[in-house]
Image 1 (tube, one colour):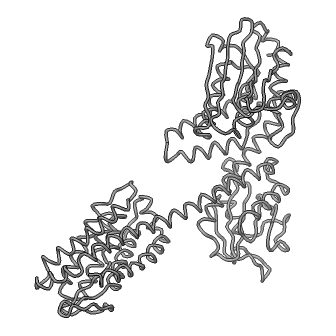
Image 2 (cartoon, rainbow, N blue to C red):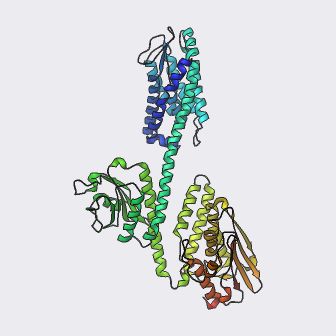
Image 3 (cartoon, rainbow, N blue to C red):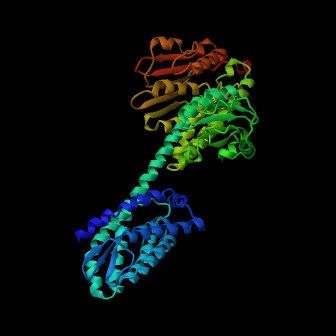
Length: 582
């Protein structure tokens, strides 16, 4: 028995190769993602797994019951010969991943092949191949991840059933009994282990690709954050040159180019001696992308370069969109089409979408800039792109695992930005509306920081109808997170308090963050404070608006000590005349 067991395990090495190859096929990706295959994909899956079973037969070990000798070559069997093989692994994989239809189809192919080889177990093995497809199809579970234990047990079960069928069908019984005694246990163990090993390899390969995709997504987000300062000015030669340079330094391609609808705005990388900015667009492929709005892969001929020895052999051309309108293209050049991988395509798609969002944000900011009538509106018109991207990233990560939570955050994000946009046209809002805006913001931040942030509210409902300037409270809360809690070890706490104090209404925001020095505290709110963490413009604008609307007595009061947290507060006098400011 040991004489057979070790060679059987050695032949499982073929599974490693087959498992890696199968991950390259699109039909298998669809199976893994629990998607319904169209008929052509189903036939391809049946054929592939069936051939997998045939390979398992050919790599088996022959056994002659008359001489009790093992052999290595499987071509044609004598009446006293049988095969110890790993055929069942391919059939079990087919049924577990694809269900009854693919499992039975693969079993038919592998079973008919085994029957054609002859031997006294040919008919029994042919039947058992189909039965293995039925058994594994029974254990197929739609929309549930396949477990290693299941694959192990199903592989062993299918092989056990084959041994029983051989005993019941193969003649003479004495030869069948001798065969099962000799090869039964090794085949049951080897094929059970082989089925689990096949699944394990598939998981590892796909996990590595998912990891690579996640790395590319992080790279796209990092590039998007780095390029936003340039694209804030819109799509022009200067911003395009800077963006292309940053992408070229991070992505392993031959060159990066960017165009608007008529002109090449920038080209960074190889062939920049004849692919130059400022020239009109020449290639039909680029014009096709501008017209269709769909990404396109261009080969060497489609690039239409007039220089014979140009090192750019292929390109991925992606449309740059702003509000669903194609305003330009982003091109990734490589030496050959073989360098265009799925991972690169995913990176391009993600980065292109983010750059398009930045162009939309740039246009929105430009419109708001034109609409501002005074410095007091500067804070109200700001949309923090980093906050937007971080929020979207959190929402995307929760879409599959916590869809209800993702929906709540998306609604909160919508309310937050709707309030930001509407604030540009308003002079006053109520404390109740202002608190709703703060809660939308903090809901997103609490999810982003997971268990590191705790928010509490102490609110006197009797004063919530009092009037306040829009976007007064949110910058104070944002300051607590950005400068107080973000770099703090342990749980960060924020307390938002709105209290009736007789003639005044006290509004305060308190945190247990890292605090600040006396020097920083004295400057905050009085002027812009340039530092590595920001300019202090938000707090400065809030303070100036409070002074302008309510007088010096209502300016910000800041209490803070290093490592002891910060409290920022102000008062709203109840006797102020609202009509003076409307």
